[in-house]
Image (cartoon, rainbow, N blue to C red; front, top):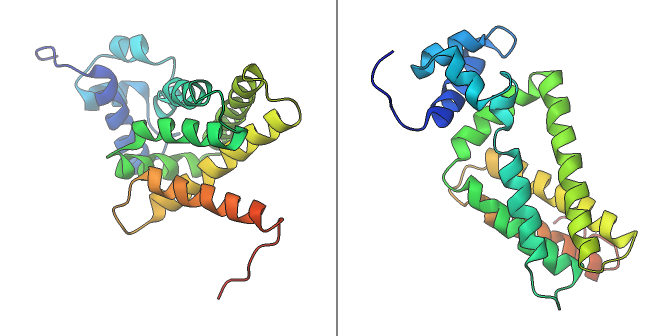
Length: 195
């Protein structure tokens, strides 16, 4: 191996995503990922438990940002406003990362094991948001419903962002999704027909 270079974790994630996209998740080994990143297998295992976790390395940060955004919103905020604060805070990790997110999502969708892990991650996120809302005094079932709503808005906004042709960041797509929820609620659940 050559001289030490910074950001081993990031280099491993990029190398893994490249290989998963080129060859498939199942066909890629840890040794190949480490080699592509110019690192050793030992270094790989210092950063990730296994090759699956390379794709989910940002899960804890996403959850922390989302939950802290909810928790730190003003005490007077409604549950939906607190949720909005959490979604806005979570968007920080996606800025400038659309192409990486697109490729990551394509790899995940192509593999049932990875898709299951993604759904588990989102269920855990929903539960964490609901708990943050309960700590703010939001009662059940409102806390759990709002947590689920937050994940639904996140999923829809994320899917629209990674498939969009324009350069808008994810925060704008989530904002549009939240406005759609607010409009639906204001209309008493009656959606306006599309023109």
